[in-house]
Length: 255
Image 1 (spheres, helix red, strand yellow):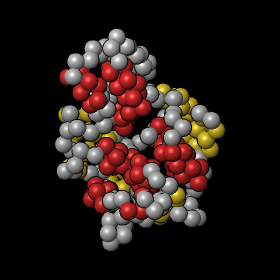
Image 2 (cartoon, one colour; image 1 turned 90 degrees about the vertical axis):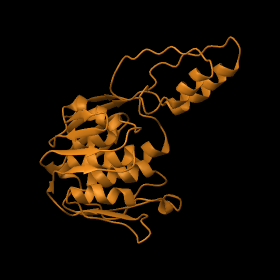
Image 3 (cartoon, one colour; image 1 turned 60 degrees about the horizontal axis):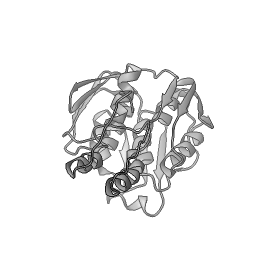
């Protein structure tokens, strides 16, 4: 998410804490194909209005996150992009993207089975819309939000509770959105400023350490700078219900 938001901005941004995982690597490669320069933890972009028209399909490898979020990011560009994946991603459903993005006026096409490739974009400008989705999907919400940033007019998205709200928190910090209720978020379109992004650690990775400490009598483990996003701490809540003593200190509300 931070990579894409930094690529939206005009100028140099710095990202601290981005993991080396395949999803991040796939997103970096897609953005590089669009003309965004990424060197180490720095992102140099001329702004989304200057992204290059891709001459070939954009390869998302096995990253559904990359495909869904980039579909939203590319929805408002004046050229059509095709997002493809490996043989596993090519079987995964993408139909949930269609209704919210089309509500903004975006062109998006899938296979008849609702799977990749995803052809998106070629319509500009988008128009703000108020959308309600039936599934609590952070990726679908994020795709809509990234597209709505490019629209003419304010947008909002509502879904059932239980989603991860990383994108919403970033937009609030950047001054481009507001939480209207626990399940509804308003998007205020406009430019994203270049800046610094600090990414907290992955609680899914930390869960192995937490589990090891939980089953060893007298053991304790400290995992600094790990995300405590309410949508990511289910495992900690389970450990607590099982009798583990857990202490947490929140130092930042973003991420």
